[in-house]
Image (tube, rainbow, N blue to C red; front, side, top):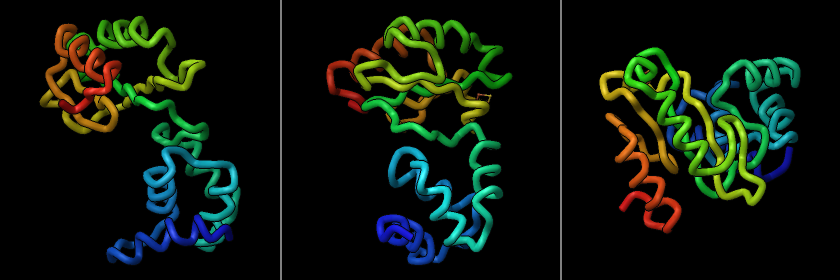
Length: 157
Ligand code: FES
């Protein structure tokens, strides 16, 4: 196994986490931003599983990415609670802002747009994550402000 993966995966044990196939995939993605091809075999070896099983789990959950993400992550929830609060119009707005569709990264690698099945904060619908920062009760004005901050390098300000 590549030493890079061993170091990443050992991080779980260092903080006393239970190591599973799923936790290991999450751990690698958190560290690298995506799951490189060879990470599947590394997780299989680390968790004493088959490559097929790890690949099956990694492709089952939509949260896993297999390509490097863009510089900025625009994630909007399209789950039922958020859809009730017009998340689709926010998604359209984000697509127009970035110039690409959800599930893709712009050619210049600036923006990756991803849909969330449920952001885990339904009470705050509609919900999004902009560069990893969870935001609730989004509306077109708030989203526009946050996207412009992102564009101008002031995200999270
Ligand atoms: S459905 Fe959007 S946060 Fe749950």
